[in-house]
Image (cartoon, rainbow, N blue to C red; front, side, top):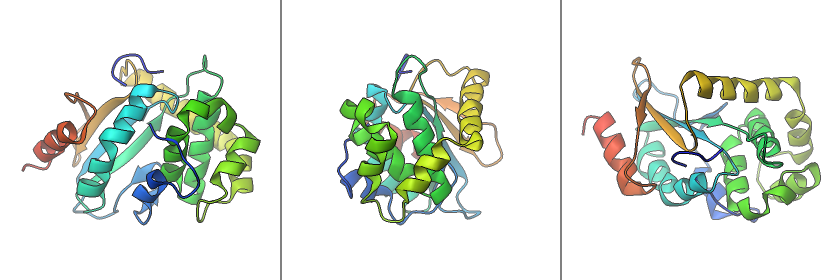
Length: 206
């Protein structure tokens, strides 16, 4: 997608990107602790082939994870949008959503961003099997099977429908949800840690 404001990463097995999220609870598309005290959620719409999304994942996401998610203050919720006009974007999304079945969605996303320049090679059954082989707890054969399942395709379609209903103009695009309130669009000054720290500190009432 990558139209309006848009994010990434390249991975060898066991990369710094996948290590970033290791040990943090994952439930489906959500990264972060499942406790009543975590009331702030970042909902990020992204395209794994989007270079601006890659910028965000490289320059801002580590700050969000280390300062807010790992410390139990914030959760992050993934919304993938596959670009049907890009040959590798939609398959990469399905592999990433399939990784969620093994509670490894965020490791999967990091791997695709880290290898974004080789996405056409990676977003294939052969390429993804080779690349995820070193990710602890991620079964490559199961990943490939799940990526072709009806439930994963349905989830990808649901993300696209949600993007349309929320008037998401491009990627990356961000919402912040506080408690039971409706998610609100947030527009960072830049794709860096400082800009997102300002947004999240305000949401946390700091």
